[in-house]
Length: 66
Image (tube, rainbow, N blue to C red; front, side):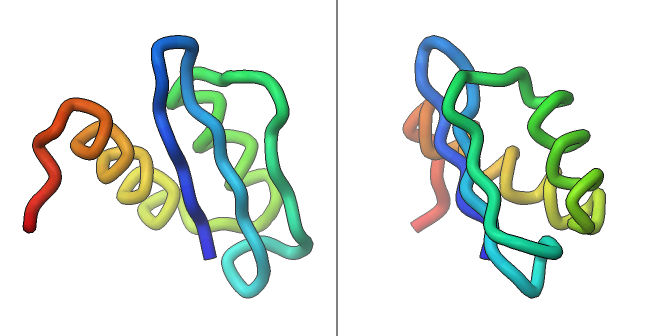
């Protein structure tokens, strides 16, 4: 599972296997690029990571598909 939320400060992620090699979460806000980089360094597929970032963007701006 990869879950990402966006707020005014940046992105916060939480990821668990099988998408990453072990549980991971960031405590400080990161940019979208840095979230994707951190997830990929932990075994996530780049497309999966960017898909969840884009979902977080849509949710944060109220444009999520229903």
